[in-house]
Image 1 (cartoon, rainbow, N blue to C red):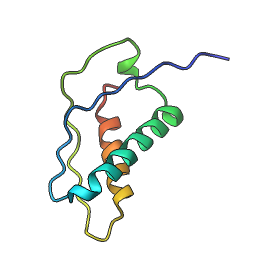
Image 2 (image 1 turned 180 degrees about the vertical axis):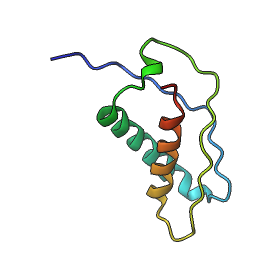
Image 3 (image 1 turned 180 degrees about the horizontal axis):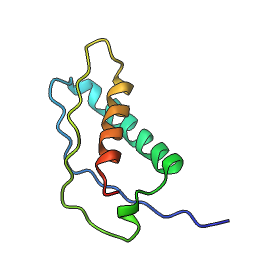
Image 4 (image 1 turned 60 degrees about the horizontal axis):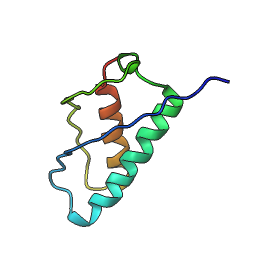
Length: 87
């Protein structure tokens, strides 16, 4: 049984234009949960096999309609962050 890596990911700033203040905590929680799921299910991206610090990554721009649920925002944001990590 192999040891799983200890991952610390700190997002200092996440710009959410057009999102109400009341939804921000729920989105943050959804982003954290989805990123955790992705690291467990899809593994560590190859570019992060050694400890490193990335001063900045450029995630994708996402667009959602007003009928999306707040958790959908979190899932799409997490996916954009994960896919932007060095492969």
